[in-house]
Length: 78
Image 1 (tube, one colour):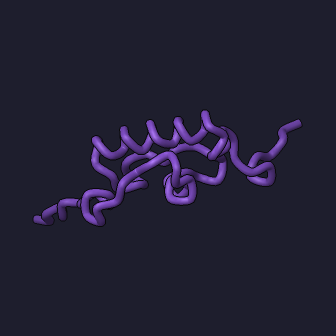
Image 2 (cartoon, rainbow, N blue to C red):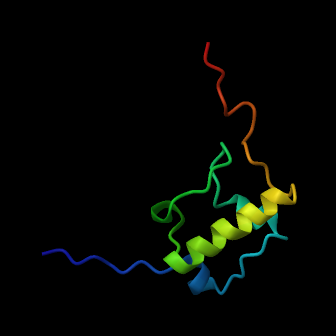
């Protein structure tokens, strides 16, 4: 029988502070369309995923991060 290895949260492991004033750091948790990646992709615990979403939304409101991603990533359908 296989045993699942317990995944550790990247933020807990590296002792990183998620802050809206560091948009370069927050960008790595977003896809090219500007959407926040899910927990299974970010490898964060629930507590830090909620904190990440809060900080990304704060950065968006202050225009440090875009609401919508790059123009090339979004294809126009006709």
